[in-house]
Image (cartoon, rainbow, N blue to C red; front, side):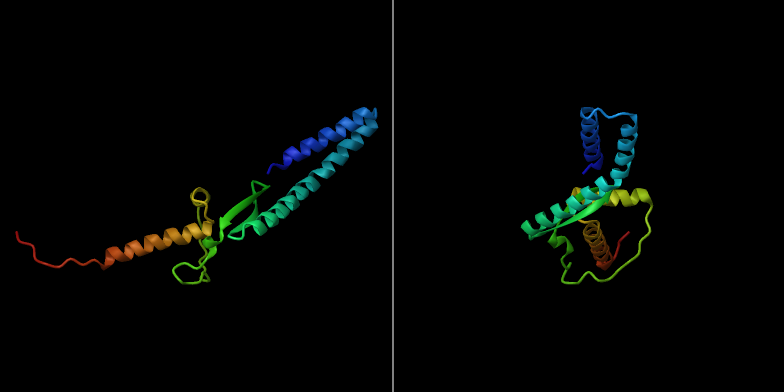
Length: 149
């Protein structure tokens, strides 16, 4: 969602009303001060509306979880399947690791997860689980025999 669109519309409506009422320079400065004061309020209203939309959509899509996230300061809805947060391989997801990443890698992980429609956590668990089990298979293969030269 882009709150700047809502703010631009509000500014245009207020300026239109000011022109209709024949506002003078004093009124113009008051309107300007009012609009600058209203900018954070418009942003908060957009966030509130996004939260209401998320709650309504979540109520209608019982198999999905809808979250409101801020992306570059703007609210947006993130939809993920509840199976993303389900137990993996019969184990609960209660173990934690703190991981420090370079910002570029963090962005790459977020994009990769978003591309497949998963949460970052689900994508990381699936990817790490796949890599770890693959490594385990490689280590468990033992070749025995003799080599003739």
